[in-house]
Length: 362
Image (cartoon, rainbow, N blue to C red):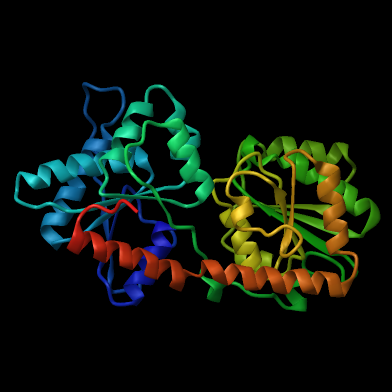
């Protein structure tokens, strides 16, 4: 999301400087307005672990001073907002007071931030940022509930570049399924929270009544158990594991339905990308997903673990060409509420207000 935002704002003529330990895969190398600065982490023999936060703070200070930056926008409270606070304090000694925007994405609050070793640092980083945004109302509420937050948090949702997504052609679809088969898709990092077994059980129930293929995109700790479960369910021949691939857009473009039965999702960017490809979504009623998916309009939301209910909803959408076409069109229309152009302007307005006005509290 940070990389795509940089690419987008660069295309609008703004100067963007991306500071990271490695070159982001999606950073546009042909965008002259976008510049990359690598964080150089040196081995320090006194410590077991490299002091990345110190190197990151120093890189921020150097880049701000050299490039005369107007604002720092950091993603995730830990370690980036924490490092940004230190960078800002150092810069103040040089007469520079740069605003810091921190965007909370989810794991910094729901996973890492809950660990006792990090929780005070997360709250400190949030409270000492100039402005804080969360990618969903659900994440905003959870942050306030879990941490001692003394400031407002703005909701600025994730976005999608709707121009990158669309429907694939018949030739591309033929590589995955026969003409009479539906294509169901799931994209994730294959962690337990994604409930991959539920994806397979839903598909098994759908396949029992409708010829179908399931495409699983991504990799992670649940990949091998998923392969074993597919074999146990007798559906291996119709389940395709694509692993990590750069062709996600093409796969979504030939899919009919997207499955996301996660235990929690701070926003549900994978669902939004599917919707931008005119693919309705069957998902859990969890986290920020209800802010993206409208039940009965562009997909369905069911209770976490309700495999039978999700399978029945999937079969309903696939029951006729007209029903599928209606849900697909409504999914595409809903995705435009989260367009890169619209959300990009929201961030630009926030940056401008901070540069000229100071703290952002609402």
